[in-house]
Length: 119
Image 1: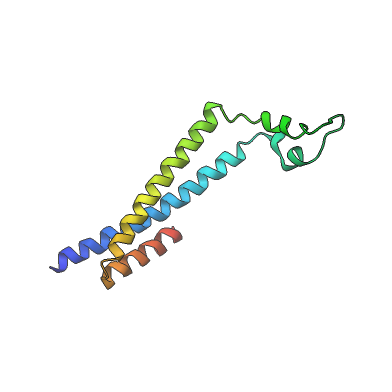
Image 2 (image 1 turned 45 degrees about the horizontal axis):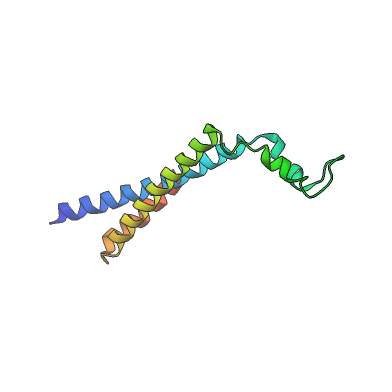
């Protein structure tokens, strides 16, 4: 039935667009998390010795200042994990549809990925 095929292609197209949107959302969340890092954790603070510091623990004091256990970092990580799970599920769904070896479904996935990346 042609209507069923058209609906299938549209669903795959939308899943591909959603996959690209989730991928971009994950990147935006990562950028926000990195921008929220405290300035004291710059690369120089981790690699260059400070005046007055001595011994092998000089770099670890900067690392200990990083608030890994704070709720804010925890929620950034939870958000990224959820984005990742959704991205993996959508990716496998599109892959399984493409593995039906139907040219129209394949084109729907390609057009959806292209459109999702463009938007």
